[in-house]
Amino acid sequence: MDRSRIAVFLLGPLPIVAASFGITQWWRSGGTTEISGNHVLHADEPRPNSAAAGSVDDLARRYGDPLTAACDERAAIWRKRLGDECRVIVGAPFVVAGNLSDAQLDQWLKQTIAPAARSLGRSFFDKAPTEPITVLLFSDEPNYNHFAKQLFGDEGISVYGYYKSDQRTLVMNISTGGGTLVHELTHALIDFDFPQVPDWFNEGLASLYEQCRFLPNEAGLEGLPNWRLPGLQTAVREGRLRSLAQLIADDDFRGKDVGLNYAQARYFCLYLQERRQLEEFYRRFRAAYEKDPRGQATALGLFPPHDWPEIDRKFQEWVLTLQR
Image (cartoon, rainbow, N blue to C red):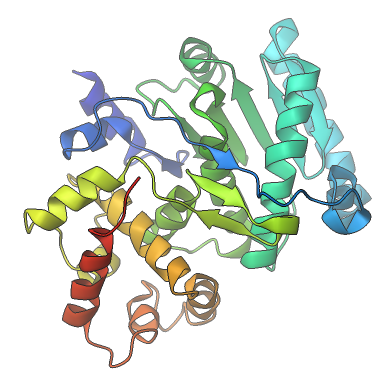
């Protein structure tokens, strides 16, 4: 069985893998043929050196000593599981570990994980984590594959990273960039705030931040165009992109067109961001979930006069104006 079929088999149905980029499926959907880096850019305006800017200690104070103690306990378990090859540090609610130095792990925690968590919390999430989140960072693809198999028995995985929801654990090939980390971190945080969120929006929002930048003073994250754009534009030009209503309503996100589904969901989230409606949509959708579990009615309500063909027309026209 070839690598792409293994990836579909392992990543699609298994509940322990809540999210993955599905890069091999993307190849089959006419997307990129190379592994593309995912990056997080810092705002031009530096964050002030003050308590208002936030720190890892601020996160610990927010979540309280019980979670800090739970993180310490989780760290002790990971030190035994990972052995001498890896290091483990704590910055509640995160336990960060991997085959990097203490200084490198600390840098990822302070410069990417903690500020991204604060930024996403300010924009979207009302419920803070109530359990430790483990972030496993491995230096390159061989080490990532080795530890994924050794620790979890996982093979045929995304070359980027994935989130194991039942274990609150991110497993990362960090050589692909900080955007990879923020993608999976989004899954981990939304899991506490909106655990019922359907795949189309869960992956759309997470993949939005594969390429992003911090807004000044960590006011939020801004998604930017990325490597998923060319395949989406090709589908638009060839007339084979299904409607947004179908993307939202159909429960087949991880089916045969999973790569194109990722791209369409990501750029719909970017479209909402550009219209300054993304945060509004998330909060409305979360509040209306019982009546609108897929979010179709909620999304339609953002676009008077509430006509899906017109929304699709404008969305696709907008997609064709974008450049990487």
